[in-house]
Length: 480
Ligand SMILES: [Fe+2]
Ligand SMILES: [Fe+2]
Image 1: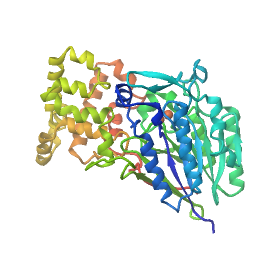
Image 2: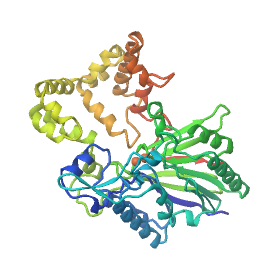
Image 3: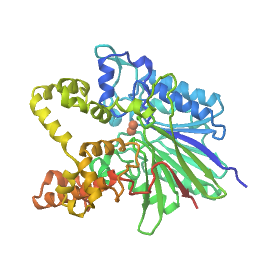
Image 4: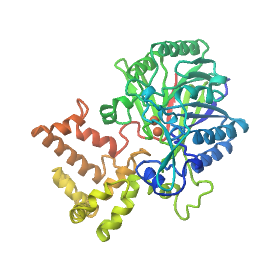
């Protein structure tokens, strides 16, 4: 009898130390244009940690990169202090890093962060930052020192997670413009590790930062360089070797997707939403080696330590901070006070430009907000196929409300418009009509955005409901 092993996984914590900013326009604008809560990242991480500490059944915690937001040392120091809190309480902590965790002053490592800044009242000032070459030693206590094997060139390592199960943390902290996965010697090391694990009779899991399977095909098509470098080779290796699960982050999207090769061999990529997203969650994973099962659940926050959210849920409280939520919440102002609408969405929409054309903006927003779902159904030529009740619903539902609902589900996954809903029928029809128009008039700009062999309709389906595994939060994977 082997004991089951459980762990928590957090990704994309994007920690921002309180020492890295003072309240003011510069940090606020920086945060608005993002899709994560930066100012409250310490409180959010602390809240997750408290949940972890309260769970005696779990003794291991993984962090899979973008642990801090912009590579600054204040954030690394405060983040590492949180890891110490976990280890002091008896938890094992395993860390890998990613592009947000370091800076490259001269563009070495092709990093997009040339230096880190502290946000002052009026702007920003330079602040000490982490170099990529120093990351390994800085976090060596959290993984490498406990490892069965370390691949020093990449900073990847394998640990014994528990009885009958090993985990490989692949550090892929390149920016992906050229490569962010393992190079040839790293792949050889990984393959050897999988073989050793098999010989020991252990199951083998992988965690890394960048996606191995894209949450949506259109993502891979548009930003292939944001994928795990060598994702095709890793997919092949996982299928050949029977490695069934890879945990990823980076897209900030909660998404579970299965890949099956021509021979019917498969694995799942479990992508986890950024911990500091309004809908942030951590994964709670249990591996039962005797049953050969890996059970994956998701744990949201019900409160944020030290923050009074009043009547609001954590999601309601955080959603309006970032761009989609902020536009949605400010939208009613578009009708009554266009100036205030532009103030509220400053940092997201090009406020200065739009102010010059206030009347036009007002007209466009009015048009948008008055459209009903019936408009999409008629455009998509599916109006006649709807029942009377469905027609009534389509006439009463604002198109924009449906669009906002889709936006709300981009990061948390599990969008709600299954094929039996009126919203699906109307928007699906609309997308099909657009596909016909794009093909007929050969609109190249749009055609370029569509993955080969795919269509706008297929892209739309990905965002309307979970057409993949049915649930982005939970899955039980057969490891055998
Ligand atoms: Fe990230
Ligand atoms: Fe990332």
